[in-house]
Length: 252
Ligand code: PEP
Image 1 (cartoon, rainbow, N blue to C red):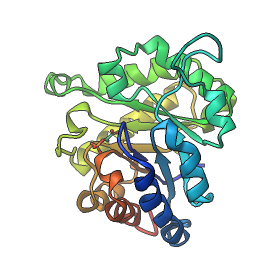
Image 2 (image 1 turned 90 degrees about the vertical axis):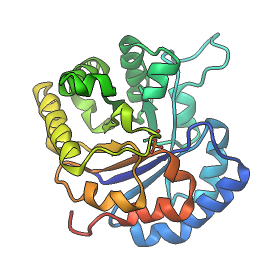
Image 3 (image 1 turned 45 degrees about the vertical axis):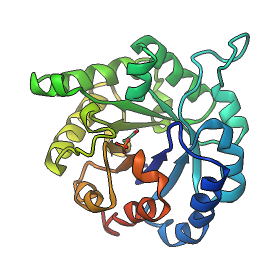
Image 4 (image 1 turned 45 degrees about the horizontal axis):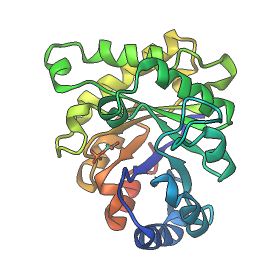
C-alpha cells in the first residue's frame, strides 16, 4: 500500500533533551495525525532506544545508515539486524551525505538495501542529482541510474519494503527547494523506472527531501506523486516538524 510518510532525519544532531522535547510532544500530536500520515523519527542510532521509549509507538523509528555486512569484525559498524532488534522500522540508505562524504558506492548501497530487506525492515533509498547534473539536463538519467543500481537486488516479493526519497543534492540544507512541479515531474519519472523494474510502482511511496519547511510542504504534498517528505533541519524543531506533518491534505 502507498503510504504517506513524513520522516525526520536528525543527522548528527540531537541530545537526550531533544528526544524528550520532540518525541514527548509526538505522543499528543500523533493521535490526530495517525489517519493522515506516518510520522518517522530517524535520530542518531545512540538515541534510538530513548526515542522508542518516549515515542511509545506513536512514531515509527529508523536509523540513518547500516553496514553492508550482516555481522562480524567490523568495528564501529551497526547492522540492520540490530536496528530490527531495537524495534526500528526504517533504514535510510544512500543519503547524499553518505555518498559524498563517505564515498559510498552503488555496490555498497545495493548491498545495504539487501541487508535491510533481509532484516525485515523498510529501506528508504535516497536518490538525487547535483546542481551540475541538473544544469547539464541529466537529472532524470542520474536518478534513474541510482534507482536501478540501488534496487538491483530487490526480490519480487520485497518491493513493499522499499520507499524512495528523491532529494536533489542542491536542495539539501541549502534553503532551496525544488518547485512542486519539478518534484512532481521527477517523482513521476521515478515511478516509471520502478515500473520498468517490475515493481508495483503505484503502490510505493516516493518522498521528497530538500529544505522542506512548514511553509512549502503543503504545495509539495498537493502533487499526486509526492507521498511525503524526508526532512532534515526542520525536523529538529518540534513545532515546525509537526506543522509539516499537518500540511497533508486529508484527501490526498
Ligand atoms: C536530508 O538531510 O535528508 C534533508 C532533506 O535535509 P534538509 O531538510 O535540511 O534539506
